[in-house]
Image (cartoon, one colour):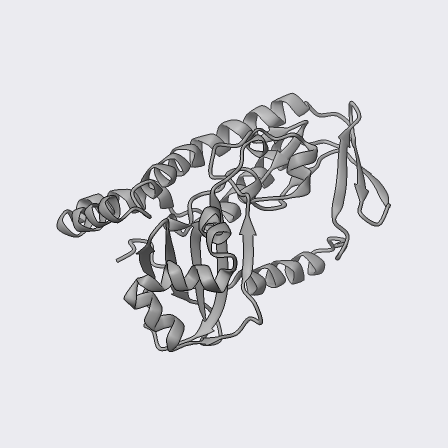
Length: 289
């Protein structure tokens, strides 16, 4: 049981809805126009797109997700180490309760299944890059690891997979990130990535955007403002809201993916419901408006 309740929605549907709201509010949206360079020039930024266009801005928000070429360009701390993780996502149609979120273990990873819109389900797992290298392909790796869990094997064999091929991402990090890089204000997964075990990344991104919007409204004046004070206030509010939750998520994830510790963790949470509630409270925070 989740104290706050919840509902499922795909990122594609949600992002498109936000895009439509932004257009109605008069935001100018450039599609298929990724930013390849961001340079701070003392009192403003110069941004260059992959198509060669150059724009200037007083404030820049980095909301480019868990992994981007801009992370490398900005020489962010977590890019200097290789990550052992691999993320794989499918949308499926299957016979599964719509009011249930299911988490299932396999060697070196875990898989989540939950309902989204239009009678579809999201099936997403965190696996090991080493297992992919060892087995040579996503399919072979799934046969050798994911499907060893009989429940997951049944899901794979009795579901319609709606993507031609899965969405795959690797080289992403759950380690703490610097919130402000060369005066770029990071937001969402670019600011801090909570482990998928906790299932709360989208809500965190929304809440982070609310916090940053409030800080900008309070501090930003195009003609005269203290960039230092704006950045200091944002960092304080963001860390106060999310830093502990990210730590709880990283710590909890260490219990899963290995047979003995994960079994003990599940047994412990079933035997002591307070433990499970404490983990959920520690990663989900409080309602906000």
